[in-house]
Image 1 (spheres, one colour):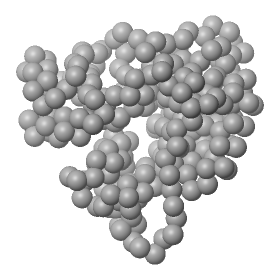
Image 2 (cartoon, rainbow, N blue to C red):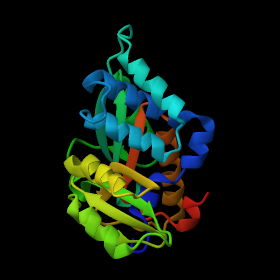
Image 3 (tube, rainbow, N blue to C red):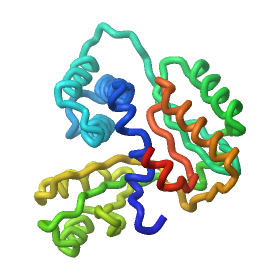
Length: 248
C-alpha cells in the first residue's frame, strides 16, 4: 500500500456517512464514558481516555459531545458494565478481520458478529487465528503543508519516542508502540504541530487483493453490517480495497 495513508485506509471508508447519521458519535461517546468510569476523568493519567478523546476529535466530534460523555462517565447512577472484546474472523477470499467491540452483553455481541460473518461467506474464528497477521501500533497522521519541514518533523517525532516515520501522498505518518502513542502525540503537539489525527490500531502486515466480483460484494456487505452494529467500535482487515470503493 505504498503511497497510501495507513490512517486513510483504515479510518475513512465510511466516516462521513456514519458521522451524518450520528452513529459514530454515539460509539465514540460510549468509549469515552467507559474510559472515564474505569480510569477517571483526567486524560493525563488515563491513557484509555486520552486515546478515546483523540479518536473523537479525529472524527470532528464536537467538544460539547466529548464533555457530556465525560460527565456521563463521572455519574455514579448508571449500572452499565461494558467490556472491550476483539473478535477475529475470516472474510471472503482469505481476508482476515479484527473487530473491536465495546459491549454490555458479550453473548449477544458474539452471536451478532458470528451471524454477520456467516451471512457474508466468512466465519468467526478463535482468538489468535488471524491476529498474527496484524501489528498493533499507534499511528499519527499529520497533514502536509508548506509550513512543515519534513526532516524537522521526523526528528521531532523520533526525539519524543516514535518508532517510524513515513511520507505519504498528502500526509506524514508517525508510528509508535501502543504504550508510547499518547506520549508521542502530546510531544508533537507541544512542538507546535497541528492537524494531527491519531489512534491505536491493528495494521495488516500484508494486504490481500480480491478480484472475484462476488467476493467483493460480500466483503462490502460484511463491512457495512459490522459498521452498523452498535457494539462494534473498530474494524480492521487486510483487504486491499480498490480506491473507487473507498471513495463511495
